[in-house]
Image: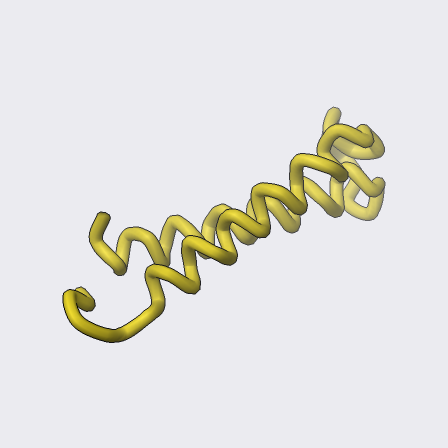
Amino acid sequence: MNRTVALVLGVVLLLVGVLWTLQGLGVVGGSPMSGVTLWAVVGPVVALLGLLLAVVGGRRGPGAG
């Protein structure tokens, strides 16, 4: 996978995961996901995966590109 694609995908996953977490905790309202515990659990997992993908994608070194 291209590092730029990995970085962009990682950032998108991170943002979606944070949004899902906030919806699951009831901080962000106006959605059927608001206040549902499932999203408070799934959100941080998705955000962590996105963070890891963004870090790997953002690394410079041989093959960066």
